[in-house]
Image (cartoon, rainbow, N blue to C red):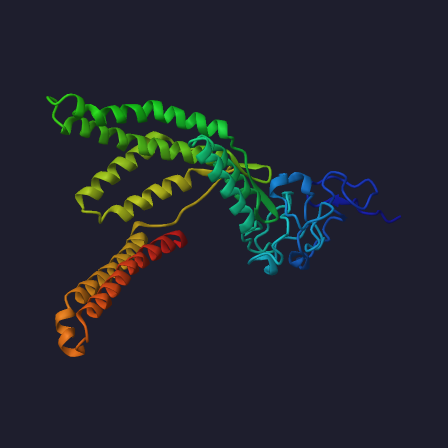
Length: 366
């Protein structure tokens, strides 16, 4: 007698009881060891809209599913047709995390996909701005949480949506603590020279600068730990396990060396900070890795600096050349000459933004 292999859900691992679909996640049952590589090119299953906040649902979707997303095998992963932008803007990313063992030989490379609409984010921004102005800034904490929830819920990776679990009350509480511990003392030291003239100005300024130097690494570590602890991919949370003391050493040493080297050490300082934050970040129990070097960042900064110097010298050449060009071009009126050179110089000043754009893009890619 030939035994029929048990049907197992490839998403949640539930053993089938004769039904065609899983009662827990809605996926189709498949016999074990029958998955093929062709399934990697099938479209992912769209989740139930009840798992997505109402304000983030697309109005074009109906009956809990999106007509533009084809229902396929739940064992499928994001294929080559899903590596860029999604085929339809109103598609809803799946919310179920796969429990299948990872096989680098069979699994394709996954890319994050953003499913949100700009008009939805713009609407959230308008509402946040209105209520923030109406409440004199108090609503900004609620607005920040709404934006983070929208961006996280509309971003998926390997068929799984990100989620943000922070609350406005937590942000308000953290801001209040920082204001009481650092804000009030810093403001007091700033007005000390105005109250007591007999105290040298450099003393409160030195104390205020030292306080700011100590506060920045504490704020960076605290905010990074909070953001990761409130972010998850599917049911797995992120976390940060670095300590303020270790980051404080990197911050103080890097700041001093940057000042002593007139900024040359700054790329190495920035690389050390990034390496600390990344290598102490975890996805579940798996740590992230970072392979960047200070020399790699130094080359990016050197190119941006060379681009800036070239633009500055060009601007100086333009500003010093009207008398010379006057004899060659013979402008008909002095006012037209001034308008031309002023417009060229102002346009050149705007080009100084190009090195900054290049620097930000190159650093993000690196």
